[in-house]
Image 1: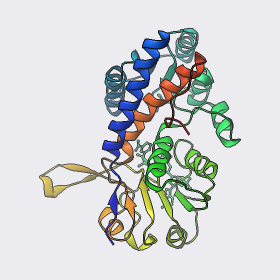
Image 2: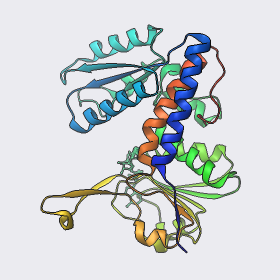
Image 3: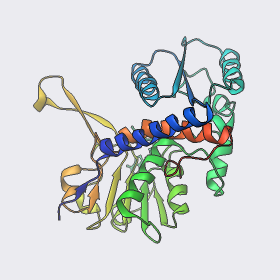
Length: 300
Ligand code: NDP
């Protein structure tokens, strides 16, 4: 069997178009322009790229983008004061503090200072609790993107055996909550799981969020399973020339695609969905803050 490819790039393009259409309606009908504020502390090159992409795509979707760049030695009080100002700013509907923060800053304290209704990353402790208890929450962008792709691929997920490899707060755990919410039977595997290959072979839906290049080979995959590869790993690619690198996922794509029913590639799978879901969360937050109809199909 050869798996169908779940094209995250194409899906993200359609999602952004839906976000843009909803933004246009909010502006025209209610005079509301959703606004996203991104806070970057320090000069981490990868974070710089993410923040630039977020800003560009926010503007392309017709929303307002506010970027706050602070030096690496910014103190906690100064950062918390900025967050308080953004919490109170009516033009700002979403606030994202780019992680990781420099080591001298307490990330939990900073994230929990964001107004929960503006917490478009879904990392605030109240949103984590709301998601876990089935209440309306802001949902972390990467697992939300995985869920939207799974729904489109499979329709109902009810009763499916879902295995998530990885139990991080930003991917594995919220993914588990979302799939429980869809009435999947959920197993969360991690570095201490016994017989990981056998656990993975049970999965109708396999989500890999580990951070280890091509760790999951095709013979760990149930024939016909849907495979979502969240991993982004940079490896040496001498075949492309001296010193060249390339990105691979946590799943060994070639052997997995020969067994799975559908699979996300890396790059071009989950990655593009993450920023698209950030835009979707910002529109959802703006709608909730203004008591307007929420966009359909953009949230969990
Ligand atoms: P973390 O490092 O926070 O978590 C990794 C998880 O994998 C941990 O739960 C760990 O287990 C588990 N793990 C590590 N080694 C093994 C192993 N040998 N067998 C089984 N489980 C193992 O990573 P993140 O969740 O933040 O990210 C995971 C991957 O997803 C990374 O490649 C990251 O780059 C990517 N990512 C991609 C995004 C996107 O937009 N596409 C967004 C976010 C992340 P334990 O808890 O026991 O240590």
